[in-house]
Each structure stands twice: as C-alpha cells, then as structure tokens.
Length: 103
Image (cartoon, rainbow, N blue to C red; front, side, top):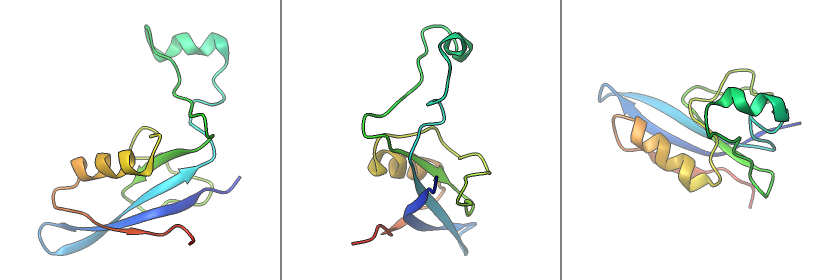
C-alpha cells in the first residue's frame, strides 16, 4: 500500500530557518484494523475514527517514508483542509501551502 504527499507547506523556525510540513493521504486510518475486543482499550466511550471514502490525512513535520514507518504528528483527519488547519495551529509562523496532488 502506497501513501502519498498531497500537500506541502513551508514555515520559518526561529524566524529564519525554512522548515517543511507534509500532509499525507493514507488509504487507511491507523484504527482500521482494531479488533472489536480492542476498542475498549481506546478509552471509555471512544470509537476508532474510520472514514467512508477509505482515506485519512495526517500531518508530518519531518519527511515521511512511503510506508509511514515514522508515526504521524497528528491524529487522522477526514479532509486535507482539517489536517492543514491542525498543522497551522502547531506551527509558530504562518504556513505557505502548495497542493502536490496530480492534476
């Protein structure tokens, strides 16, 4: 299964060092394979977030690998916009976004 970078953004660390943030489209939620008896381990009243279109969007503040071996820096989101807003709330300076999806 291949995941892809659908959006990148640039922001400044300490006002002068350019850093990149990535929005990744994954073909699953990290909770897709939670067994029924494991749902209780998520906490009282919690359910895994599964998305109807089978896609989930994650934020990475470091370059991710295609197999997503490094954990995401965010929970899964239903849309690119929600993931982008989460990244913006965590970056200390504004993010300039570039949509990298194929036209």
